Length: 281
Length: 281
Image (cartoon, rainbow over all chains, first blue to last red; front, side):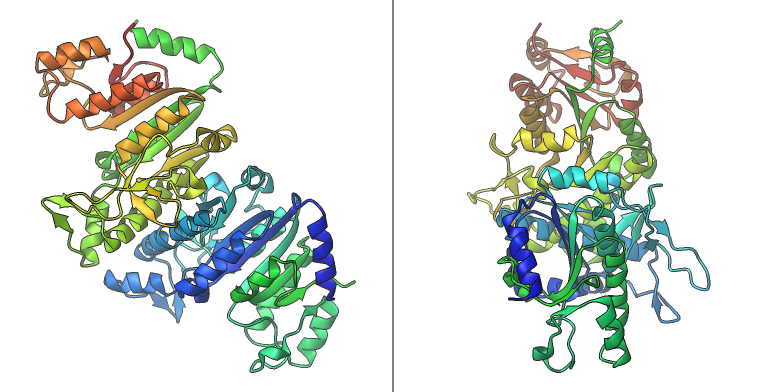
């Protein structure tokens, strides 16, 4: 039996009222209707409080193109100008978010689709202009979320579904990174709930050999993370992902799981999936 | 002092906890940013529980056109096909709804933007195909809304903002008439709250002479309504509006006000505005 299997089995015995799962899915799940359907079915089956955060996917690009918009790039960085913000608000907060909510409702999950403007749940600051003006992009700090406010919804047994849009509190919507929203939500809510943060992506989890899914690393603590970095097993794109995950754990999140959306099914039986990141024992 | 001024002054003395205002705005308010801003400012200033329902406006048509969509008309009736549903979901639930929410938040109104799918708040039935297949259009019956469900949000001091989209509970979003949503919400919630339903439109209210805004009728009860119909003072478009309003009153709504969005300002001081429809005394 895995360490996390033991822990999760114990959790299952207790009341689930103080547990919270914050789960983020990216474009790779959104873009494939079959993957999305399976994921939402498995998400709905998880007991207790849960929050879903979703990214955008290719559909925002497709709709922009059908409206004749050309991506605004400065030095290779994507800029959220007025027209881009309009499209992402329509696609993320409208089309994607509400179709996810309707599907979750059909699986008896009482989902409620949100941006950070709704309920003032996530208040961002427009990114300051330094060398590049990113446009209507929001950054989050520790004051972004009042956990008690969101707890009102969770404790009334609603399941919040956030898209990657926040606001500045002055009437302006802001495009905001979905990974960051997930992490900041999990940290803020860990003051009130025993919080597990789950990032779903295209791989089984952290792999020793990127070409071999059987080389999945089941568990990593900060000491092991240092060793894996020195051995160059963790590098490039996975490096900032894990650094952010351990930062969230250092700020109160109980554990972070990085895994494949397909494997969430095993999780509802309180079995381990993906790579579990935990504090040093 | 008007009759409703007396009543509203009395209401003001009591706790507002059991009062609810359900307010519907149409395209004429949405299409004009200055009108909308003033309306939202005045809406935010109303004390107590309130719900906003908004229609679509010209922007849905503009965005459809920019995407190269041609309105699908059968026998002159607009059909909500798959592509139309996609656009209205993007525009109503995304762009319009979230910009309204962000503006209300800037006026310290804790708005939360919703479709009927969110929280399963409004469950519709896809309109049956008779001579015309209207496509993804939802009709509402008395089972559409469980008032206790929405009361969870209201009593947690959130202000729901509904766009004109519902769902069937089986994963399908449905385009639904905003006037009907407002009326069905008001009737359902009148079981729990003393409910005032307000329709904002382009005129001051019901006018004796349609070309003279000074001919506003301040108050109409069902007996007077019959008389006004016989005198042909109320006819054409205003007739079904008032019939629906009196039907809502017969089902438990305390009063229905039909007036101009600009005049909502006077209402926050508990002064009468528009035409007030009430039961026979």
